[in-house]
Image (spheres, one colour):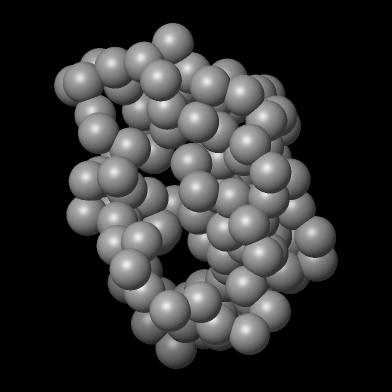
Length: 112
């Protein structure tokens, strides 16, 4: 599946009411297929616990989990926005929490 064939709004509802504190970043540019993006190509914009989605500009704990809302896969997202395949798409604090949860699971379930 190529990035050019994916609709940027597939499965994404824009009719939802906006929550308090919800901020969308301004459009930075447009991909070759006409899809606008909200973060610089080649960069993951993150604060302590959240990351900005290139496709909609929302701040999320994990962009990887959010990509289903747009109908994109992580590989297509990384190719379209010039990111490394292994680059984390979640904030540093979220990665630490996930690592701690996995470490505690390893203690009790060595089969993991």
